[in-house]
Length: 413
Image (cartoon, rainbow, N blue to C red; front, side, top):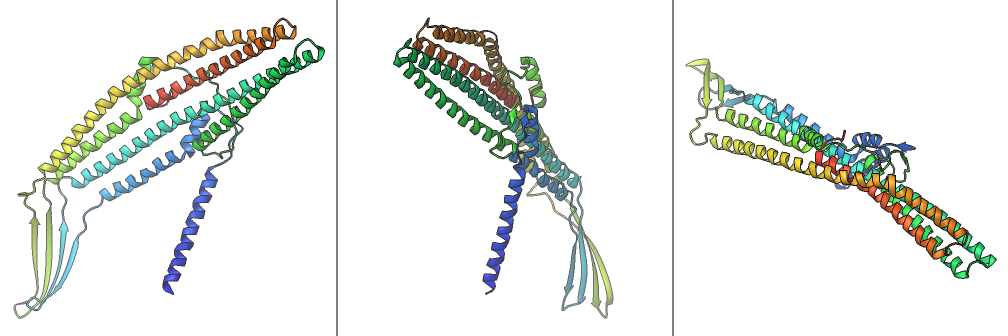
């Protein structure tokens, strides 16, 4: 019977815990706003992203570690009853920490805390890059929906015109059938684009802690976003890269461990005092004092210092290697983003206006009977492909900025 009662209690506590966790998840997934800029999305991710919150929760562990490192060793008390005299002994031992061992432990704990805080900033930098990528993938998906809808509207008008010309005898029935087929394909393209948009919105909402079905209006465009100069980007990365900050803090932690290992080589004395009672007829109450210290003969601590020093050397080498890697990655990312930016500008200033003019002229020529339906459909298909490539060029630019932000390890200015 007690086993059943205990099992019932465990199940009850488990249910309460799971219910509370589900409630907290539901609370975190708030409704998305009506409009959302990239900066607002970044701020929301830092405040509500589960990965960021999990990284920030690790700080409490290291704060407790600092408190644990600051503790003093406990004294010991002893009571002995013996058959021989003296019959009673009441003693105490007090360990004394010398050479600043407690301070060195606190330094190591604080350095570990600094590593955790730097690692949290690294997680935030990665999440920022993920948010930028997901945000502009959703923006591009929305633009593809617009392109598909425009093509569907044009195909609908072409189908109407072909049907009218067929009914008046100015065009064969084949034109009407081809126009209807083109309209059906355009409608499928629109439906597919809307499905992709919903998928990318769900991914973005997950990063931001919103409900998956939220559909905020994303206010930033694919053509936006300033591209920093290469020298400025490299300098900013070397000064603020999150991975480099983590390695810097790890170097500081390794130095603190070297200092602790050096301090631990010096032994600590133990002071003891004992009060004795019951040694009649020689005496009733007596006492004795003592001190003990370990002799560093077999275990000198030199090996521990060597390990700590080697770890410090490795951490410094890792930091130097990462700095060189960051410089190269940032330079490459800037070059790719610059090329993508040129493609975006060329589409905006030259290609898209010309494609729009060609589509207008083709529709007018078909409506007036100067050209056939195949020429119009071919022109519309070419225009659609150009618009899709323009959207992809804008997305490539934003993804290049996301890669640059990830390589820099800090927010783009």
